[in-house]
Length: 497
Image 1 (cartoon, helix red, strand yellow):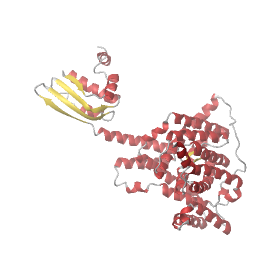
Image 2: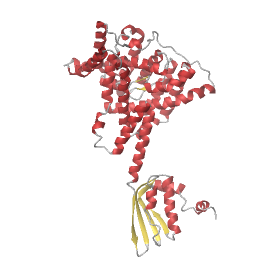
Image 3: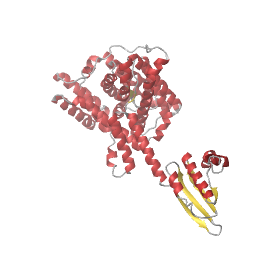
Image 4: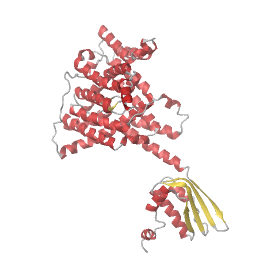
């Protein structure tokens, strides 16, 4: 069964994976160069990293069909390190980033994705779509009309070519777009921006390169403040992308294996002179839309990338940026969750708020981790508030025994603790109070403290108090932290007088 699964991962979609890998490789080149420029390093640092990370994650990653390479989110975190300490310290930080990510995989931190709500994922996706589109705007400003015509023509090819009989379904339209627009630009000798204008392409294969930094505590102090956020942002973007590709392909992925795979890939990148990277939602969507599904597409994307920049650089330099802008606009449109706009009227205000805040924070800060963190915190607050409303207390009086029985229903925790306390009438003169907890659950110290407060107040008023129906989990936390049945603890609180 395992052998069959591996065979399907690698050989289950050969034609689609080969063509998709070629399209992704072409789209990776300008992005890897651009991200290198953002980080302040030579273009080959991003290109070598993209090659290594794509090939490595294809083999050891947890998500077939997902593309990992050098990314803007990671490049932005490297700027200060490169500026103040240089490339060698960046390579050392890349190695440490990989180590942290492997550790995260072994500690199964990939499972934390369960705590990220659907509204946060939707906000993340929409923000990335907007950022991808915004990243194309420099190529569309202060340019000649030829660029707009080429971009519009490219979008026409991308969306109309699939409707052609037979051939429309067999060749990815983004690849057709790149080939046709390159041919037109070369034939007409158009003076427009090309990949060659982005920076010098490497002319040699990468070689093993141990970072030239002293192995001292001082070096660790320099790279640690960069390696930690690089590891966190890299894993966050990779795991979010994996979740999105899971949805697009209706398949599942191993998030903890992906953590380890990203770590191994970054260590490999650092050892051949590359920068740290992670999964790319834009390239992953290009891969899926172009027919890529298996590990072969990711592997070939990395291999084709290296072959093209080293051996076919004279041809690759001729590709007009307008062609790649058209492809990335297609990615932006395909990535954005348009249903989230339609659902604004149907979904609760809390759900819409989480989605919109996530989008705003990511787009405003260009920090994916910050946007997701704010979204998760906001979703948690809304959830806590919603759950607290389902906690209520009702009561009944047995006049024969002069006993008031309170029935507590729901979750008692920090947000509902005050509501729990306020539900009891401490002024009522009764001989006995029974608190029925069969349908209640106590979650934290705040809830235990609230219960102590209720019991002690009733005793102070002269009533005997009995708790019934505690479940095992609630009883455990109350026994451990509660004080109402521990005279010595009550004595301490009262000051020992």
